[in-house]
Length: 194
Image (cartoon, rainbow, N blue to C red):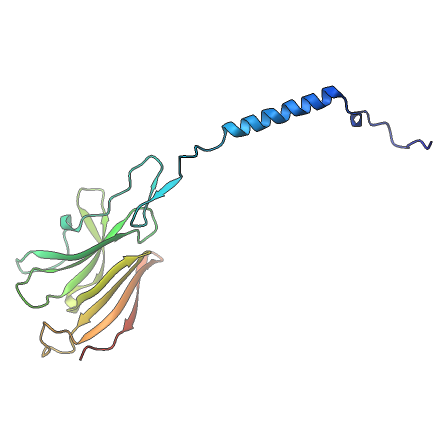
């Protein structure tokens, strides 16, 4: 028999006590890991219908109500009308904004619209944080939507003052997305209705 030049490694000779200690230590680790598992009914965040999130245990944040906002719209003493609105988390901060299409309450014709982004301020009333379409541009809004942080609208306008205000003869598809701290506009000219 050849003898090893290495020293005798006593710890390689296993005994029953060694196996029992190892099994006990492993059982303790497995039991501790089982107590540290998350609650299977809890979730880190819950999604609301408008793509905003609420942390576990908190209620979802409501989108600003445009009926309570003051718009930078001069209606010459008339009321303004919120024609359409859509909520969405536009800047990715987990709190919804509201995009509102607003025009003066006119008895007839197609008054120009403004498209505004509202956020819920620290006070009671929502505040306008961006004007995407100014009524001074004399456009009205056709199709309108907010999806996945993108605002899209079909803007209707007039080629001259001779075109009746009931019948816009120009249209443009526009979209806005929050990038780099501002709403960036993309446009696509659509064929005219004439």
